[in-house]
Amino acid sequence: MKKNITILLILLFSVGLSFSQIPIEEYRTEVENLKSANELEAYWNKLYHIDQEVLVNTTDLRIADSISISNMIKTALMFDIHKLNEYKPNGSGGLLTVLNLSHNYIGQCQIAYWPIIEKCAEIGGAIDSFGGKYPAYQLESVSLTFYNYSLINQELKYSELLNKLSKIKRDHIVDELLKSYQNQNKLRKLNEVAVLNSWYLQSFKNQKDEGEFSFVKMSDNNLYIKKYKRIEKLELIETKEKSKIYRIENEPFGWTYVYGNN
Image (cartoon, rainbow, N blue to C red; front, side, top):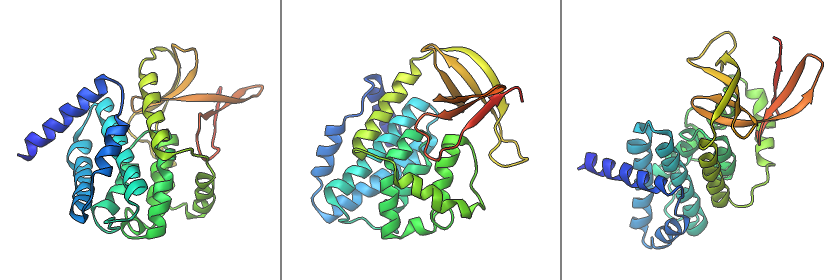
């Protein structure tokens, strides 16, 4: 039975992707219709199982993004509509809120979703020890997604980075998540024109990861960084005599890439 449900969920997400949209109002109605304590708890459990049984086993990036962002949006709607009713910080809901971030690999989504992480941190529960003492695991998710750079054992940086994330202006979490999904669909329509250069991925000093990242020119005539089959737009910050300095569009920490002869 579980196998059939999983296959059905994947098919439903595939159909949704074919229309390149996430049905926000359907999700909103779905969440608003939850009335009893049992219904609310069951819904948290449902989202958790979608993450654990469907999302983590999905290899198609389009489907994975749809599932991931849908779970993020539904979580945001649960907090918006039902506040903390039947939200158990040490239960499936508490775990899901953190997993939503760590199982999403789109920087724009993580930035939009960050206020949920802040709210959960205020409440406490599973987030306090999930993957290590808060905020290590959560900051690690963001730094790896944007820069493929690990923050393990760099606690002295945490306070500054948290402050930068908290200052980012967000109009509305659900709207921002939807924008990020739409942006991903636009990026997938671009064609790769040229690879300027490629380098080994290296999240730790003196330790190479599997795979490479590249600077690529796309069919919209803009420069992007490409890693793990995803692209993010690069902005030229400064041109020097022997190098150019780029930043990833909308990156949160103010970190840059120096691109030159070396």
